[in-house]
Image 1: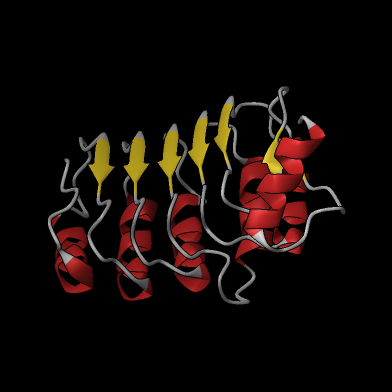
Image 2 (image 1 turned 90 degrees about the horizontal axis):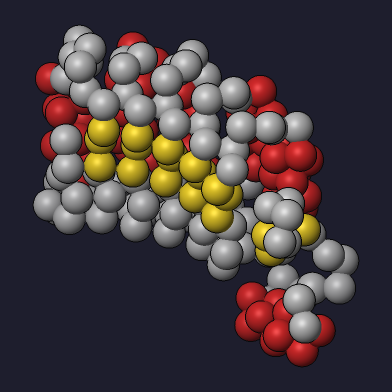
Length: 181
């Protein structure tokens, strides 16, 4: 089901989650670019918890913050079928919510995900170190995207969080390009 860029908002997605909660054949759900915030994530998490047939979930370019991300992770914790998760261009690292710690635990134990995008979510150095720790324990994710956050993915697919970077993303890019990495 592709509902990308329909300006649905939180209320409509809440109703949608209620309506498709018992659906056992939905494989792909794209709710990207719909102005979603934390308000719809409890319903979305509940849907994800009940729906084990979903293989791909796209939520990029919304306004979901850390607590909303925690609700989504809670729903995904029992999901054993999701292969692709795209949470890029949200604000998951913007407020202190424990999201990075929960996300690290989620990816360290998940054995189903193969593609994961959390680019441009304002993750700090501390958040990135937590995520790198969880990612190092995962052996199924082969495509991990993290650009626009603190740190970078090296040529082996590891998340590298150097101490030399500033929290300023511009300084980070300049340092990368001048060091030849």
